[in-house]
Image (cartoon, rainbow, N blue to C red; front, side, top):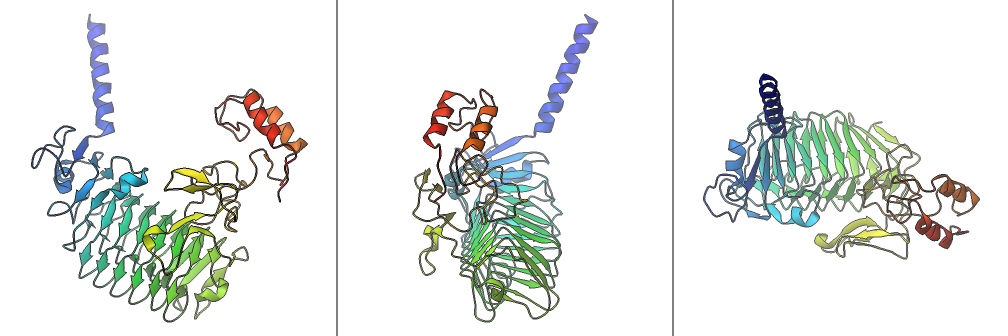
Length: 441
């Protein structure tokens, strides 16, 4: 009996620990039945800040689709907590686009100034129409380093710096975000970063305007700014239409800089103490597109200057319909139809990124090499080649047949499993046979 009681206590303790580690979930719904609500599934909070205030580190604040405006739904302050504030599905572009934080010009979307670290996450939200007479129209970070993923930061403005986002003394991670159509009366139309580090990955930075320097982004006195698989398009400024480096070390990898404009200078600009390294990227105008008054530019011979062949882009057209997927005769993801389509052209940015970069998330067929631009290294990367050309030689031949035979009846996800069932069998062989002796045009 004592043994049974002892085991029961252990089970209860483990269950409690498991639940405690998992963290609580607080729901927010602008159309909730009660005001303010309790945060449960059936009785959600109506205001985001109410949920944030009761959450503790490890908790999740889940925001249902809707338009969130008015007090409690802007200038949202996590107060130093390691919490996640997200939509119901940050990976669904429709959910993200319809989960909207809109201060309507009365303030910012988020305010971080209590030492938040990378475990404080905002994910899958649209932040629009924020305004401040100071810094950071959409998001403000001071001495704080949150993680921002899969968010749209658009249509915000700042009276001084950082129309979309401002951060100072912060080490920021921005992943899978769209930062577009923001304005700054001074520097940093999209992003303004003062001192600290920043990792920006798989982001679109487009159509931002700075009346000073750095249309897309301005980096001041910052170390280790790493921009990977980003697409900077049609940003504008007096200098550094794409971005500007003031005494900062900026590294650009596998990215596309196209149609950025500057009244003085070029797409990228740096001062005499700035350093910019660009490699395996498509830069319109090539090395001449970088305004370098000193000796701070490191230009890689693997960069290209070629039309990236975006799915849809018109420099003077509506930014809301731009599509920065890369055209491909072998397959391009179309967000409107939610399907793979084919084009008459193939972008030179496909399979042109750093060969040492991780391409494993790109769907097959691919050249076993990452694409440049925002979708490189993701499951929306444009395709290239033939599904049966396993060695990426440009032909389906005996070498590919040997690899197919070596995987016969295997039960694992691999490129030989052509019909994606997880099992290599006669159905896959039929597809292989259909492509036998194919050759790259």
